[in-house]
Length: 322
Ligand code: DGY
Image (cartoon, rainbow, N blue to C red; front, side, top):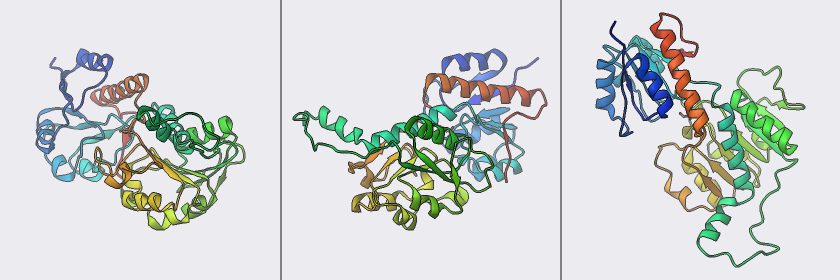
């Protein structure tokens, strides 16, 4: 029996690449070079399934070339880089990898929160630059985290995991905004507020955990940054386009908010040039799910979805256009 032809757009952990090779005719991306539009189109014409990820902009014109492919197995939970409606029209089933990266991503949100509050990036830069002259009572004073209020925008799996860390680990009060009502957040005393503004006004730290794209593009804009406390911190591990980066850079420069911790950017890998020079911004290179364990689990989940699809079943993590 001929094996299904599979194209993987990026390098995966060896364990999951080997697993994939054991039951498919897999073309792996040995160089890990990001596919351009033409290579993505060719993949959709050649393979039965294309296993893509966040660095592949699957736009309508690219998806329209899917003459052979029937499955887009996304390595990652966020699918805002895929035009879901166009994928549907092209007869493609789309799957993603929810659940397995929840803790890793919440850990990075926590890392950013602590680094921003305690000025850890600034301190590290000072030490490496041989600019540290020794301990001082007023040196690099940060902001206390314990007992403060955390505002979560998007109380899904990752939002809850972040709330859990902050409440049980740091005694923080939790308020949150979520599009639909959340009957039980699992966090004692957590309060769902009516609007994004309500959360921004009430919080010492705001952590974004909503999907990117669509109506969430620039959800955090100049007006909403203005609504935050001048001492508050904004943490983004969701998607870069949820925040208007230019407006954020202006707010940080003007001291309109206390600081920010960002793991995602509007035009990755580019970062708004004004952010790069700001000491009150902690900037990480999209590390949310970057642990060995999590990346293997993500690959295994893509394979689980692929196997179900090849067996004629509905994949467990099918994503549908809304
Ligand atoms: C995710 O899973 O969405 C990560 O951000 C990588 O795409």
